[in-house]
Image (cartoon, rainbow, N blue to C red; front, top):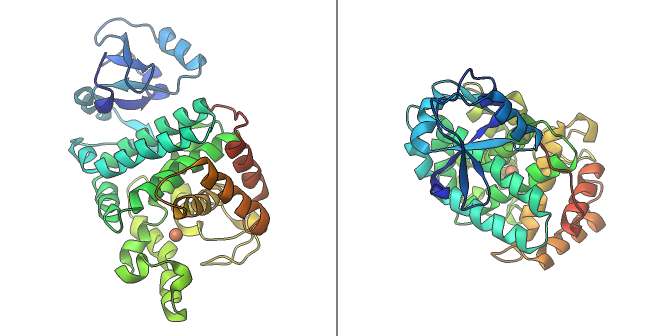
Length: 325
Ligand SMILES: [Fe+2]
């Protein structure tokens, strides 16, 4: 058994293609338990790994010191190669890591399907690993966390709900879910370029002129991230289009539902859900989740993609969603 907090998830697909097992590999039994399934240097058959994959295991775990050896062999998450020299950045993301823990606990307490939730958490953890390996991204995210005390929690909730909605859509490709997680984490990064009093103010309270400035944050975010090596275009689209609305009333371009990137439509809904839920108080409760769903279904049906709203309904109502593999 290994210390759960330090273990790093690695997509099983990246391990199956390797000729031999380079480092000790663990499978996660629970948050606290990881069991060794393949020892470094031994002749572990790739069939063993394939069997785990067939059972629905998407990630295996490695110790952080071993992760360095693996990243040199190009681990890929959300289509981005992880090329970190050091994982020390990961500890700097601890605020967001803690936020992941509390959001997970609170989502579990409202009765969301446990298997889907656990998988979403794993996808988010893997995404944080890729960020830690990208100094530019991780510096931005660290800076963003300090905007307000709620930022980290909001960001993580958007990311996690977006992944769960993706699973509900049966977008079973792991890379797609990882893009949702990454897009969820980065969606508001453009706010870093806004004057702090506008970035942190409730948009409803902004003056007309301030609102014009506020509405530039998706474009600013896209510009900030555009130079990031290997960042998938889908993630840039999430950042650029997360305020577009299905009836064309959103910004910056006033796109209609079919014109909005499918991943951005999902993050837009996750963002609304997170805003309502966390606006009720500091914690996510069954009451606040249902209220958010009600508010969206009664008053905002034209704003969001209908399929995404249906999936959210199933999620909050506790109906099982298919687990992605
Ligand atoms: Fe935003």
